[in-house]
Image 1 (cartoon, helix red, strand yellow):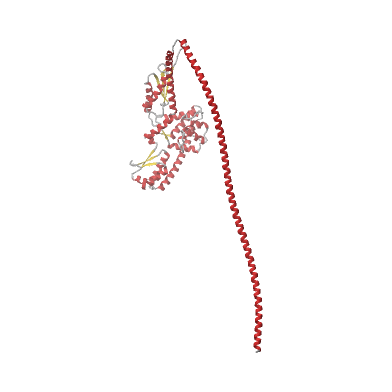
Image 2 (cartoon, one colour):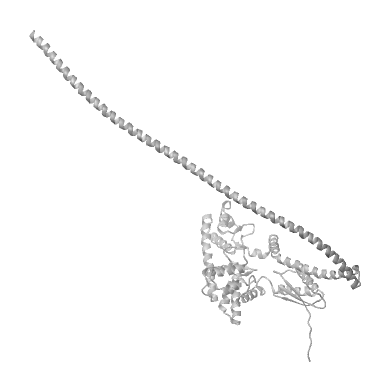
Length: 517
């Protein structure tokens, strides 16, 4: 019993002790939870404050950005308004200025109108006075001369008729001079029409090259599948290739003789090799172009060495070599230039001038016929510009530019080059004209002029480019002389064939010869 009670008491004491300890532990735990909660709350509070500050800063930056954008837009609008205001102000000033100018002009016109009215009144008064004086003068003249007004009028008409004949002839002369002034333009039209309507042999010779082949089978290989080979060849050379029914021949057509020669040599190599296709064509044409360029330079060098000319620019030497492939009136240009150079040297030596300069000018005088581009200039002036470009001396440049009278001659070399150029081109056979035809044209010119009444003598000079006609001073008047010159020109144009133009000079003179014994 006592044990049971002891156990119970012990259990009670243990329960109380446990309750006390548990309570203490619960209190301490609760305190810890509260302190942790307070710490967490403090951290959360700080984080929320930071987030709120960041959000506030972000909103502030956004608002500032929007405000700046609005301010910039306002600034742009303000600038536009200022510009418009300035332009309106400027326009207003211009309008005010124009209005003032109009006002001043209007006032000037008003004053001018008033002056004209006053002058009109004065003119009317003077006209009346002049009419009265005229009537008075007529009466006085009738009394003095003893002629009536009708008789005087008839005599005046006769005088006016004679004057009218002279004026009419001078008017015809003026019309002819005006026609000569516009002749260059009309001549170009005629030349163009002639080229369009007539295909002469000379044009053919200077624009085609015939390439001979062994058999017509080669034509098909040159043409290629669907014409690709011939198209590639034309594109590479710039020459039109005509493959027609002509047996064993292909025609290379083009106005550039260098391109035609490149096409001819390229075709020769392609046919000899047998491999004909677009890639091979481009390769061969490129090689041939380089070969021709080298040959041109070599020809130019050989020419200047043969003539003993030194210190010439390489580009001028290349152009001299290019003359080999150019012809003028059927005459090879390089051969013509060499002839002219040698003639110039001989003539300069005889006249006591520098033969080397003369030879140099003679060789370069037609250099303007072989430019790399095609400027719209006469070949003489173009040659002068090329010579100036490559540092030739001034007297040589002047000789080149003036050898066709397209500019003034300033040195003694210029007439020498002009004369030697004419000698080289005018010799019989040089330009596809035989001696018989040449002499016949000269005789026909002289005989044609002799058929007119009043003509005493005729002379065809300047290789038939000028006809001089001498008439009797007692047989023709000055007006009839001018009419004779015009009639001769018309008749030569309609009845004769000649190169270039023919100048007709009619000479009328009176000679009085006396002898003192």
